[in-house]
Amino acid sequence: MTTGPTWQQRADVVVIGTGVGGLAAARAAHRAGSDVVVLSKSAAGSAATATHYAQGGIAVVLPDTDDSVAAHVADTMAAGGGLCDRDAVTSIVADGYRAVADLAGAGAVFDQGSDGTWALTREGGHSRRRIIHAGGDATGAEVQRALDHAATVLDVRGGHVVLQVLRDTDHVTGVLVANGDGIGVIHAPSVVLATGGLGHLYRATTNPGGATGDGVALALWAGATVSDLEFIQFHPTMLFSGGSAGGGRRPLITEAVRGEGARLIDARGASITEGVHPMGDLAPRDVVAGAIDARLRQTGDPCVYLDARGIDGFEERFPTVTAACRHAGIDPVRQPIPVVPGAHYSCGGIVTDVAGRTDLAGLFAAGEVGRTGMHGANRLASNSLLEGLVVGARAGAEAATHAIAVGRVQSRASDAVGRPILPRRILQDAMSRDASVVRDAAGLARLQDVLASAEVGPVADRADVEDAALTLTATVVAAAASARTESRGCHHRSEYPGADPARARSSTLVLRDGVVVLETPAGVAS
Ligand code: SIN
Image (cartoon, rainbow, N blue to C red):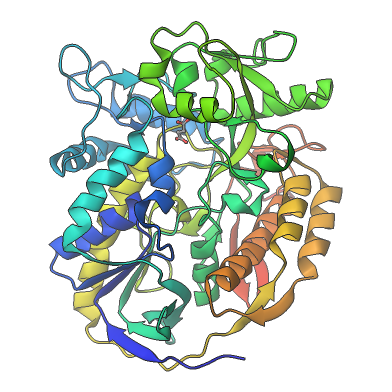
């Protein structure tokens, strides 16, 4: 079934992923003197990362403004539905300005107001304007450009697919990798997972094609713990396109459009959020996505609309959104934009501390794949680039320190192993039907039956590892969502419409003998 490793290399630190978390980690490890290898499964370079597609911006408390770390922490905790870790939020938010200033020092150019200071916009759940942006609505592209430029001194390799994180009894020893030369091993005492999200669990998502849950699966296969994976955030405004063109990656319409005054309406012109939340169209994301989903169920319409016709200078402020709309045949200056909620961000992931350390020595995680406790049950808009920058840099520095402490490691020769794999279309259909914005016990049980029909197959290339990762990640999402018999943050159960105070804690899951085990259940109900 498999061939053994055909090549071998050594590094101090292997970083998997080239978005904000990965490149921040790689830069920090390199600065600390480590021999760093950065791997990307994509041959397409940085246009393949979720970072590249981020529009709205980076939430950050700037000095000498009316904002404060305490206010940003309070907004983050309010959005997070009771599951944020206050210490983690405070640590990351307080380090935000330093991290952003470092990125600007590396060449990132943020939009400025007429007084020459960084321009600030607002998004859902923020009590004030604190989002810096670039190129209007092309913040991620600018962040990626600056990080790519800084990474030219690093050893970055495209077309390298990690099949397995290798370990001995108690620590990481390297990675098993497929590339154009076959399957090989990179021996390394420190591995940083920065593989991004899992939006392709669903038929339609704002995420790029590589967002297939690889890091969550690699961590579980290696024996690490994951948490909060039932909390998959649906962005309220993904561009709607009916028919077969509606699947795969779909353009995002940034929340900043609402921050600048656009209104969400249904086909009859009625407000979607009036009476739902005091912040109206700028309520936290879970509230707005839930309100849209409810309106669509009530009316049977295929989409709602974002009316941005009143925004002066729309094309200049939102060039990315304008181009995406026009590509789809919609003129956002003259027409309301058709939108639906779309799978956007995993609030949960691999359990780490605020320095990216997992519970397996030598394994680190940063960015969307990690779960620091920053996002709780629902991430506050534009907190993700912030977390990726801060935790990525810390994880890289920690990985370098760990590599020095451990010294040379040797992975035992390993074959690529077989894993349960469900055909992607079947998996995406089942997840879209049964684990979307609103869930219930019957749907989740049906989903678990579908997932149980996965058959073990070889994992030797990118398609195999993605499909195996999607299958395991979906299994974890289904288990966590079934166990959480309440509605909290972006997890909505139709038969349990309210939050249950007895369940205000995170679930943690591990893989034991190939079986997903809910180690800490969501609640303590007696
Ligand atoms: C957006 O621009 O609306 C997305 C920002 C985010 O996901 O944080």
